Length: 277
Image (cartoon, rainbow, N blue to C red; front, side, top):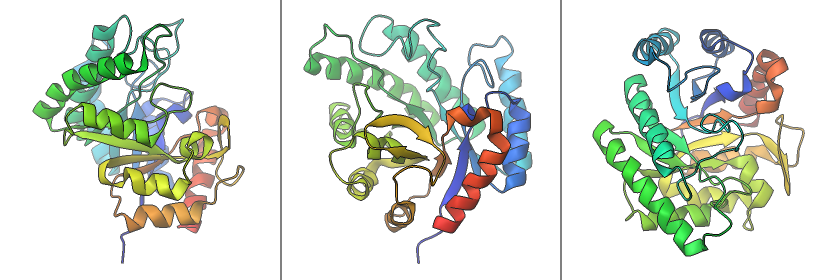
């Protein structure tokens, strides 16, 4: 019999809370872990006193018995005007590589097995083949750091970004030489939103490289993260499929728009997932 899934909640859904409060709330509610987005709100990877802050977070996670995965999806962390800029495909590659390397080091210190990343949009004047090559080259540079710390990269296909499907993510994996530390973060809502293949097929397609799962409800063609049970997704078969493939990473709720009601939304989300499982 497959083991129960382990549920987490994303800190980007707690934008108005201090991080130590977020971790305490999630532990009180019964979550297994947290998807920690590095940004100015919670754990700033450019903070002057970063080593002390990381150690404080590590101790808090340990005290509450929470697992963690580190995420780098904060949209305006590097460029206050350009969402998800710079990318690994245009100008400013070194800046993005530096952020991802910082994230890998932080993940290693926190005990996170993975660092989440996504492609961002490709520059309009760069042909697709060149964009893939640039992206693979940048990811390859980060994988060198990942090897040192033993932390996997978990690449997320995201709607309307250059890498928006599991198939394109697997193509990128091939361009990195099939590196063992190149993994996939599958966002269930995103897959429902944009993938051409059925959602359960996406789970199976990603299975061999699946490291993380993000989960929320969504409607086809509309990239809006909805509370579980308020969109179109049938969750019990999805959770069953994740158990069937033996997924052992976190399944983390990601509802950024619910920050004003975050504790209650987190409570309802966990109740929903437990019932659906």
